[in-house]
Length: 313
Image (cartoon, rainbow, N blue to C red):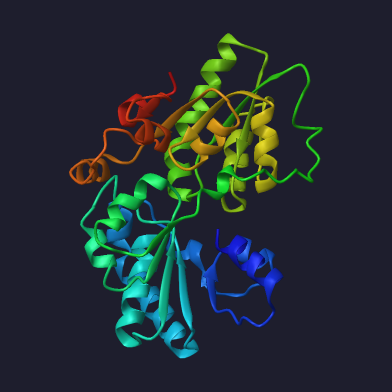
């Protein structure tokens, strides 16, 4: 998301100087990051707990770099437990720096009380969903609904898929998540799912969409299980073509469900965390659904298989 914003800004003017923190997408447009955000990407409570010192050290380092850079605007994107802490500390040191946050924290799912705190250090917040406005309007936080970039017109793939999309096979696309910790939990379940399917059917091929970071993990698991009907693609631009050729999709709960829905592909949503994380998390959740499509509709439009229900069968 940050790379899209910067790409558009660079098209409009060359007079902006950037100090950035991000990942491969920023690197792909020629922007150097002060460190790779993947170094501090943790998705579960206990993962964060065990890495608090490392995360806090990175927050302090980022704050010091931002203050030293002394920008007119601090533009933070998503990852609220990291970026909003940076914004809060920067604003405390230098109140003159304007702060804009893109992708509101999901206060409609949990920790709604964060809105009051955000008001103290965020000047403007950009929203992906129109229904989020009421949470920030209530606290008089300046906000703008900008829509979700995943629903913009897809970029045509430039990669050759001739070896992947077999004409005589029905494709089931699989999206196991972007975080390595998620992939490690879900892949054994997905591997056994394919094994069960292969015992009953011979005309399906399974295409995994992976991040560059996780591609080798998935490839090795598929290789170790001697699958001849499973492939991995990692190019982000191939996603829309993959979905257009799929008869079904299996996806980890997340924004990918919007893309699947937009492609009009039948799907199920899966998610699993360890028992301790699940026990802790359930006390903070404000919604009975995990998938954004179901949350928006306040009913199960897309089947969700969570925790014990997330199994090969």
